[in-house]
Amino acid sequence: MVINYHTQTLSCNGQGIEIGHKLVDYFSADVEEQVASVLATNTPQTVKGYRLWGRSIYDIDVTPLSGKFRDKGVILSLKQVGN
Image (cartoon, rainbow, N blue to C red; front, side):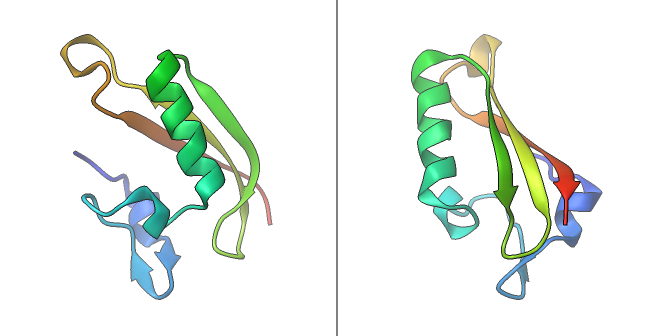
């Protein structure tokens, strides 16, 4: 699993994002529901206008893993769209 450089610089309650933590440790229940929906339908979705930890606003693309990893997880891609 990989976290890109920009994600490593983000901070939630003074701590960086780490692989292995629960999604709700970093995101709201709304994002967790979107991820569950993507896993159930295997269809990508986008969370629009999500304010990340009271900071900048992001669109979050939720893309299901494919191939032998299908149904095993998703990729979250954050695109900053405002402050």
